[in-house]
Amino acid sequence: MTDRRTELAENLARVEERIASACAAAGRKREEVTMIVVTKTYPASDVRLLHELGVRHVAENKDQEAAPKADACSDLSLTWHFVGQLQTNKVRSVAGYADIVQSVDRLKLVRALSTAAANAGRELGCLIQVALDAESGRQGDRGGVAPDGIEELAAAVEGSPGLRLDGLMTVAPLSGPYAGRQQAAFERLMEFSSRLRVDRPAANMVSAGMSADLEQAVAAGATHVRVGTAVLGVRPRLG
Image 1 (cartoon, rainbow, N blue to C red):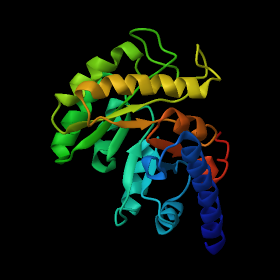
Image 2 (cartoon, helix red, strand yellow; image 1 turned 90 degrees about the vertical axis):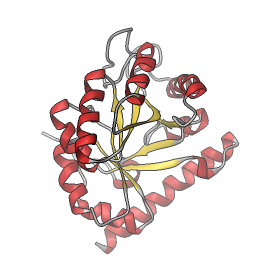
Image 3 (cartoon, one colour; image 1 turned 180 degrees about the vertical axis):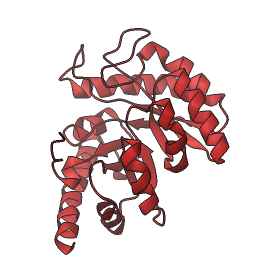
Image 4 (spheres, one colour; image 1 turned 135 degrees about the vertical axis):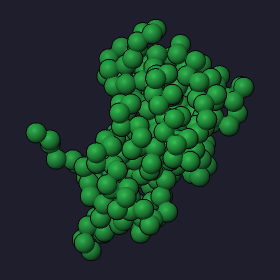
């Protein structure tokens, strides 16, 4: 366990240096960017070590893994983010432990989250996932709503009991005009965020960037970056 703690500490230090350097290059303050560690496929023991090392934001993308892990770490002061594509039959479980759902991309999901949050007596932060590879009325290959659907979802979240509109999220697309152009994609997301904040100034969270492209996300203006492999190591292939 000591070796794993040392490994995680060294990895965190390297990521911290990357974020700090990216902030300096962009003329931003380091405290403007929050690192979320994506702990999928790694055990609760790693989450506990990360907490010891100062991490306060963690993320998962599958409920069947996230629910027991969150329960095992319920004594820790952590903010849990759900970042995966979310099916409505998992919403009740997710609403029990997630603090922020970053993958809100359809009205049916908004309604289900509202019902589950209200029943659980909790308030869930919501990020609208924007798919920059999606045409009007369609979803992206990695989830998310087409840009012209942002306003409808924002209004729905705002009007739903138990939900709080926190901002926007995207995953760099693998196809379409922004494929291979991560910074351009993230800058586009910032444009949508600026529009959203005209009437909703509190919805100022912008989640973009992962281990490979966090510098581009910071340069574009992201407030949160989602880092997994750079902290925890390369995940084993499944199947």
